Image 1 (cartoon, rainbow, N blue to C red):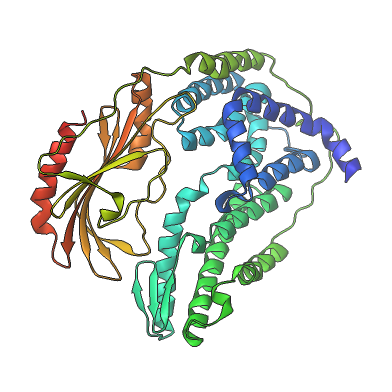
Image 2 (cartoon, rainbow, N blue to C red; image 1 turned 30 degrees about the horizontal axis):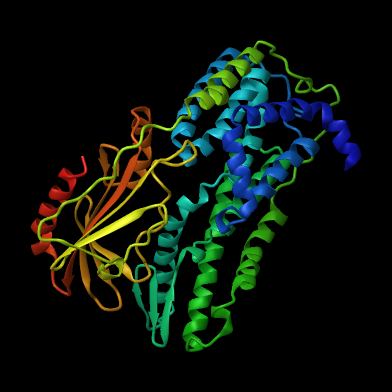
Length: 474
């Protein structure tokens, strides 16, 4: 293995240099990414291992080892322009700390750096490696809700096929002797991520073309999803047959990996294997070919990390929003009919009038490292509260699956002077807010308790309250 690595080092060196330069240009985001790897959270436990696999593949199986001659032009000037454009966009995102989009630009910056220095043909050979490295980005958490919803639908259908007595409500499965919840931990995100990683490794090691690469990837995703659905179904059957008394219901980690291995190992064993033929004089070897790309690298460093250091300054602080609501009195958070889970960075105030509650949780950006829009976890306990219906944009009826109580809720986000119904859009509003010196953020929630009745008759009441609050947070 060591001899093979040393033999491949001349072929690996250009890509290792490109990787080091890309890390230098976008170093603030790479540092945060490395810190996220070392936390070993559930959705990113594979991050550090993926980065090491990326480096290992570059050393033992470098790109384009036996690629034939190509007539494709290098277009390195286009690569240089792409690198500068990517750096400028990344600088804006890093300035306002939209971390998810900044992370997504890391593989784009890596590819653009390779294009500027190595040309387009060698960059295309490097592309699968960059895509593999992108699996280490903290983007998996955004997939968890979708995977949970999909698992709930499939497992609910399968449970019906078995003829078991069960009440299925969203991600909740109520059996005669208890209730099972398909929570975030049942999303199968770890199996999903590792299956994709194994598929990409297999494709790279076998030098698959794009069609075989796509087939392998789709097969891995399908097997990972089915394995997780089978795992959850097994737990439901065990819970049903043992009256919720089996130890497997509280300790099923090992069982999950056994089920996953039973699906993925045969696929790896029977996947086509292609052995590389060695070509010592491969045209893909050599060092940096396009020296003019170095000027693009220098420009990217000046427009990226250096410009960012100058731009990161704390904007002038503004007073927090003050709300004056006639006929409302301040109360405590535990009085809310629908409890809200908020991070400690937000300062919350709550007012109540009869069956209507107003919650305003606000914060202010204090330094360049702070986020204007803080990270917000899931605000409501979806194991108990389900959205029964949406009456209008931003106005929904929540129902407690245990007590059957209903709460009419409207909620919006204030980013400086801008307003959004969506948290995702609020994150994007950070860009114009930061450029105009805005520092304030607020999450406004208005609730009206409906009991077990229809909430439609309270819609006008909650809209009038929302208009009054909105006029005082301009």
